[in-house]
Length: 195
Length: 203
Image (tube, rainbow over all chains, first blue to last red; front, side, top):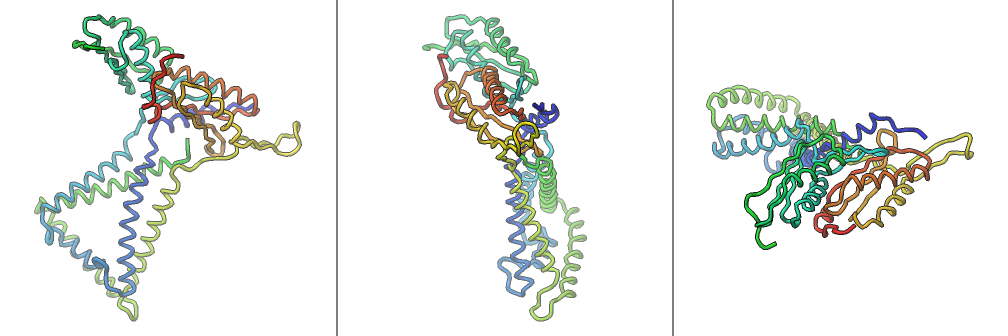
């Protein structure tokens, strides 16, 4: 039996924990295609000597060249801002790393990637059992480097913060997440009545 | 794990983003700054005149069209074709064959194992579990090498470590059956179904 090479698996895990930008690529391709198809229509109409549909290419070039004339400055400014926003979205999506909310677990045979949501719900369950409260009183937020456990105790019943922290930390140790997050436990000062 | 061209996505998105940013900055500058207006008209007016002159010089005999519109049309067709090809390449990479080997000593001839073998076996084994609301297994072709992706959706509160261990054990059992160790990725996630079904209280 041949063992798959290690950098091959690393590559796959990297691809799973980073966004592929496939959706935005589709949107960008659609926008560019629509613009190109419209320009194509006008160019062909011009080439075969037919009247233009909306504007013929030469008039469009002159209108662009005379630009602040012929359009209200407010409209032009708003158009500029909208174009800037769209451009910024595309540009940042192209440049930023685009990490997805996922952690990796050490796997023996297979590489394991876990959504942060699943980690959060497992930790919430542990924290809930340690604190002795109902699920609605615990909220866990998992980010790349930090896990925040928020507990709202039942009014009049003390919740042992150290016990909650120990339970959550023990669960995280068994998971052995990469990257390893730090744990913060917040006990709400206001209690909940009627649970 | 699929063959989406990520590098190309990044490069094209960055280029298109820069294009839009430049157009937006120009429009904003023309709307607000008189200096930008002077610079733009000093540059764009002669450029438009040049284009008009070029169109007049390359006039087609007969109907008043020009060669440059035909060239522009061809370029635009190439752009559209390129965009279609770009979209068509997103999410490619599904494969059918899990293993294909020509082994001299064991059986004569070549042996091919369909990806459906692994997919059905793992799916069936995972369907019995009550702590999972769903499981999908797909075979991908990663740079010419087959790989399995196991996506499981556990119920709320289920420990991902236990799920990972159990699925790993299933994969090892599959290794023995199939006789090939394919690379496997286990992806444990939350979907709409795991979010809105009840949490598992008893195990």
